[in-house]
Image (cartoon, rainbow, N blue to C red; front, top):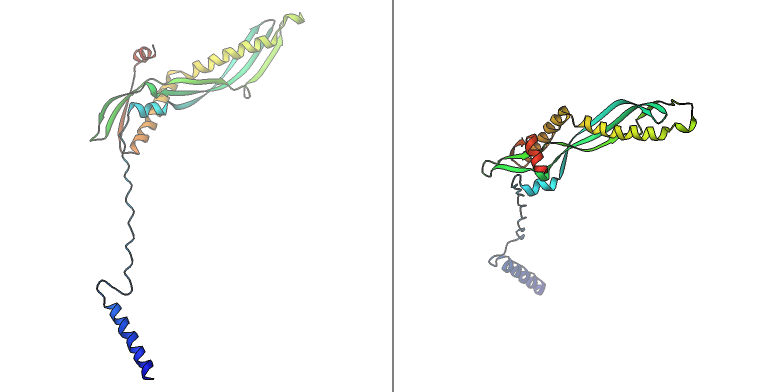
Length: 204
């Protein structure tokens, strides 16, 4: 009995000695959890390289509808032409006119919007009438007349899409997109445009 009591006392003394060691705490202090560092995103604002990477900025899509009447090759026809075109700005020709890193303000100059792609929508284009105008069967070539009218329709869609009203609408749309894009990174952007003469000079 004395031996068991002595053993218990020794165990308790050893435990107290371990707990009293310097630098020891019980229970152990948990390691502090590292706090995530905030992510810092900085923009250098508009540069020629960044604008070139955007390539063509499609500003608007124009829908065109018109009626074409064709006559020749011994036949006559009428078509309801429907088509569309994309008007875009070539950002590879953009230039940075002014840039203030401190105030985060910049001014860029863009070429005028141009018709990038015009097409006749053959699925929605309708034939109103197509008939022969001669009593000689082999003198009537309806396929040739249709091809000629469709080629004219292609030019019509491109010309109608490039009207001053559509170009102006494309300019407003492009300005809105670019200003919103750089506003997201804290920059205030001013957009200016080449005149018609200067844009032709650049193209040459």
